[in-house]
Image 1 (tube, one colour):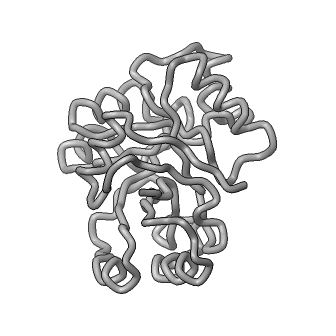
Image 2: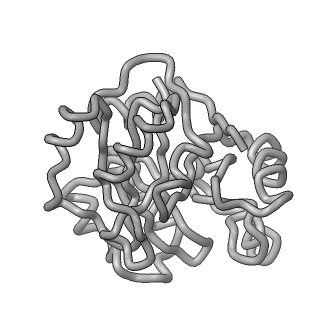
Length: 208
């Protein structure tokens, strides 16, 4: 099963894609995606209901978040009420260690996004400030990466023993699915996704 684990809709301040249009594009282009996860910036969208689109297009549509920390952006899967109270999702400087600890305590998974990005990625912060304990997964394939970014992510992930996932980081419809994550078993809901990520039953994919 293949899911794009990093997408943005018009719910994000810089997103220009409607969720329905993502679904239409996936089907029109006959893409090898079984679904996608909406990781809106600095928030968790608990209100929007996309079940009718799941039924209409036969896709899994899940909701997560992309939060900002002092070591760069972090994708958070399995957001619940406890986690929403643990730190301020709207902040742009959450301490990474606190986000990682809170996610683990609340049964969620936190994975730094585009860690190989120059100046702002996780590994650039490592060079300046040193590593942070508690990281297990990072995004090694990002659809918005510049040449060399993902190669750095892959090298550093291997060096530190991190597992790697993939996501398009799409903000417009035509970017969805450029990178994704393949899972060994079915992922029907967020509980399934968190369990699969925690168990390491996945691999990053990219189509360039």
